[in-house]
Length: 95
Image 1 (spheres, rainbow, N blue to C red):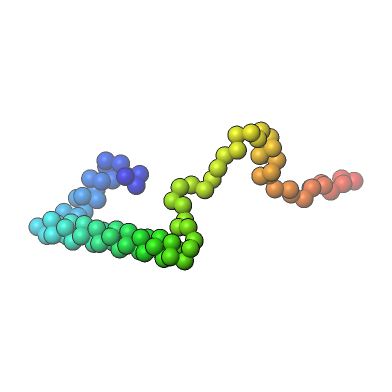
Image 2 (cartoon, one colour; image 1 turned 180 degrees about the vertical axis):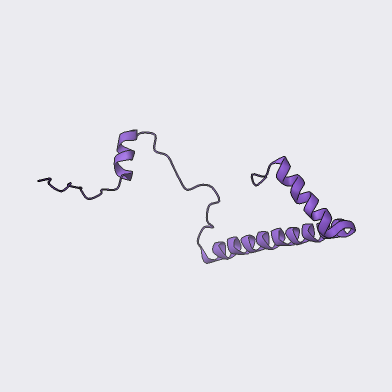
């Protein structure tokens, strides 16, 4: 969960109790409702974009990864394509 360990969660919980005390359940509910509303709005927006893309005649964007691996290529070929050519460095002559 966001890379937080048990000690960090305990510290956050203690700070929350000190700040909000008896109102902590109310604050938790309101934060939960806000997150739920945000998720619903995002889902609605995504659905509307998919519908408008379908109406326009274009296919909606794929939610799967567009990265495809070609297993017929060798690692050296892929490595050669990904390396950036850098200028050659010639050290100065020592006289």
